[in-house]
Image (cartoon, rainbow, N blue to C red):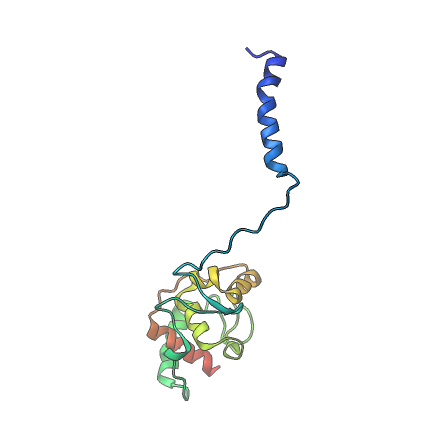
Length: 159
């Protein structure tokens, strides 16, 4: 059995080590060396618009013309099945933001990528991260196809 003196002696080195580790000393910390971007990491020219990884929607993938009412009709079915619980077709926030006017605030490719690649967007895109902070929730993956997401974009454009 430890005596009080033996116990203190055995704990002293541990206490000193913890103290040194916690304080970190007086030497100024050097900045970590700059890392080369990872192959799958976004390369950003502006903080608010990352370049998307392969497979994501880019502006060159979209041709927007007059509203396609057939796509809007299809999107309304998807909205009723998957989206209406958290989003509205007005500017009013439900759980997530209302969709009216979103097309004036976000680029079309951003909107589609948010629907198709939510997790990546939340992890890498400052605008998506700000939405999570604002709403205190992350949109679950809705498992939309590109065509469905494009139809949803058309619905948002029509509002």
